[in-house]
Image: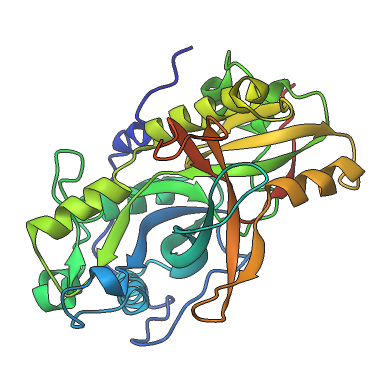
Length: 351
């Protein structure tokens, strides 16, 4: 089955309009932060992922910070009667010079994303979830984005006709069981069917996630509105879920053939595609306490080290390059950054 489809096209089929009236039951206090919790969801609308522009790339100190923009977006959604929350995770990586047991470079987590998620829906087919998704994608136009001095940058492209048109349905990232039972979701089964090295083919009960590839809606917040800024956005954050799936499959193949590229061994790697990301896992285990799990976490997981310039502890993530070693001046043909924190997950069971 060919899976290189636009996964967000699923959302385009959802065409029910949201009533304009808000709900008095949803609290909306300007300036208050509403943080995501495990009891929210389990299904939600991923409205946007927001990040600050690094200081070295800013032309002015004016404009809202990523947190200010996220809080304002949540506030405006809540005023419409839609429960919304913020969630932050460090994901953006920056290079530092070092040697690695897996590659020639390491990366360090410096700037995180702030996700805005909305709604508390029992399933991805819930009628209200469909209504809210359609509203966010086509009708919701946050007032603060219309003021140029706030610095919200959302490039208009054929794939983004409205400010938040890339919103999509997803699971609460804090929800127990990040990869849901495939037997309960025919779309997930179809998405992974006939996939070479699919996690559904893993014989063990558990596997270790070493790399995650996310798609979705991303905003930059900065005090500028220029063609250069829009180009920066497209260059760094324009990947679709299709490209994420391709990237994950390529990494899986390279890990299974690592010796061919100069590594000490090949790895039992698997790939799994969800509705909002693709992941690469390594290993097949019948217990979370299998000693091989700890060994792999040590090898692939990030490590904290002190930045010699600032003295701060920074999370350093391993990389995987093709080839493993390069000649002076040679650039690797391919390079991937592993997750800073590897996670053991249950293998989805299909009956």
